[in-house]
Image (tube, rainbow, N blue to C red; front, side, top):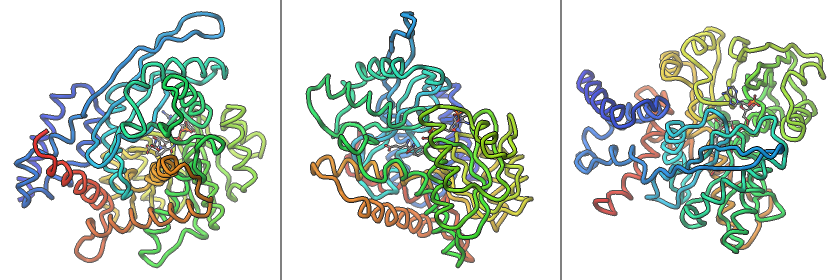
Length: 451
Ligand code: NDP
Ligand code: 2IT
């Protein structure tokens, strides 16, 4: 039986790899989902016969375009922009925009594919998409970033719309970039409409959207622990990254009485043996979003140890929050974390654990592991709430949005339990998230017939 399942997975993956050559991150994301969905479909021929999983792995469309802009010296620069519209079976395409030199089609296809399942888990009517460009904002002036964003939107605007496709931020795209992107869209279409989320509060943004992903990842951890009669309070935590997700994750952990031992960026990590204070996290937030400096400066400012070129996974801690980027925990890192006795991982970043690392955590039966599509769903969930507020022409109070976010993270957790509970009560959160995310989208696709 087991061999049969493995055979079917191998065959399916052979096709995916042949159709998407070189797109290794996309292969990885599909394999992670297919590992659970193929056995789930074994006694549900309708999904198999109508090739639902094959259809879900093929984006509705991939748009690729040239972005030409002028730098401060007057030289012309050429970048490549993308929007992957993966699946709109349960709502308009929805997902972030990433500006990073590593961006390519395969990376955005993995992110768009993940987004379909994540958005479904929130219970809100959102399909999945992702976009971005191989633009490196590091070292660029505000005006250069503005010109890039305007050039990017000058092509993308024709493919998006509040009921069609609603982008948001991701790596390298925060409040500043969303302002420039939205301003250019508004100018081009001559309409003020909720086409992008993560806007500032003054022009159609939602309370709690900046905090939502980081807070949500902590709420997911609290849900997993409290399911076992435990809590976040008093635990020592390893957080990676120091951007939007990491900084608000750290803020909420401290708020809930946990100790944040580490933060990082792509150059290295800082270690605060006694735990970072709320003031230190606020200082780091300003460092990264206003002064756009390096995490090493925080080590100097606060007299903390800095480890150049290293990630935080060798430090002993109980709860782990990877909040930087994909594949930041490999098999060896996972083995180290398990050896150091970790209790839980909540993935703030998208696909931060390599397949090998997922296996290592899965074999360590006392490790609770929430996959990205569940753990970081709080961000897109509050984006969905921003869309609702925009179409109502209203702004809900902070407490209301915060309460809804808390409720959505509970719903995400409970769906993982419903579909992922094993004999003996152990919850496979990957299986739960994959199946719960899949069923709603698959059923909608069945209802539409062949397309
Ligand atoms: P930011 O751009 O605000 O921050 C990214 C952080 O990760 C920075 O500290 C950056 O370091 C670090 N980082 C980026 N790339 C790498 C790399 N290749 N290696 C090591 N470190 C790296 O992005 P976000 O905080 O928004 O996003 C972080 C993760 O969370 C991503 O995986 C994103 O997809 C995911 N996510 C984001 C959501 C959101 O609402 N923003 C929602 C759901 C998921 P440096 O400054 O050196 O570049
Ligand atoms: O990966 C993600 O979920 C995001 N970058 C946020 C997407 C959104 O539409 O808010």
